[in-house]
Image 1 (cartoon, helix red, strand yellow):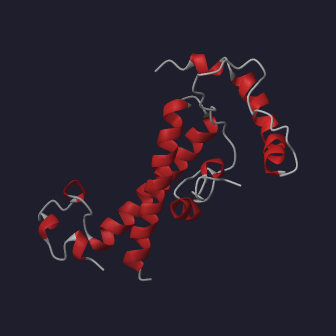
Image 2: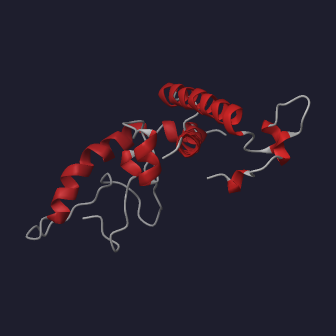
Image 3: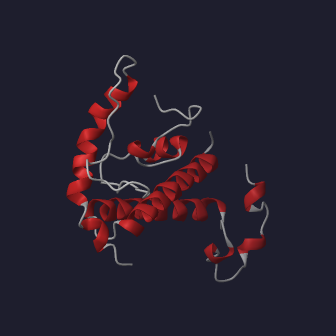
Length: 84
Length: 82
């Protein structure tokens, strides 16, 4: 499986990740009208994007089985269509 | 929880961690940290499996390792074991 394509956009993904927290903050603030995108400025429209997972912390095997994932960043319980 | 259940639970947890790492490694085949963790869980699983099989018999037919008796058919069956 050749995944070099993904490696080339690592820089982009790291930037995307750095932007994530502040953008989330913008979205949850109800008085803030300027909801900005998580994506870089020149991201083409009408394309689907999947952020590439980076190695981070892992749960222990006990918690992993309970949460249904070994990776905290993939631990996204369904909350009626909203993660906020 | 008795010894049998605890060992089965351990195997279940290790299997899940291994499956998760398997999926991660499919897209990140050269991640050393994932490879190291995979190896660790593989060893833990093997240890737990050997312990279970030696104490309570085979979990699947290929775990049967008695050279004089086919202990796969011995009661209780894996799904009957409490």
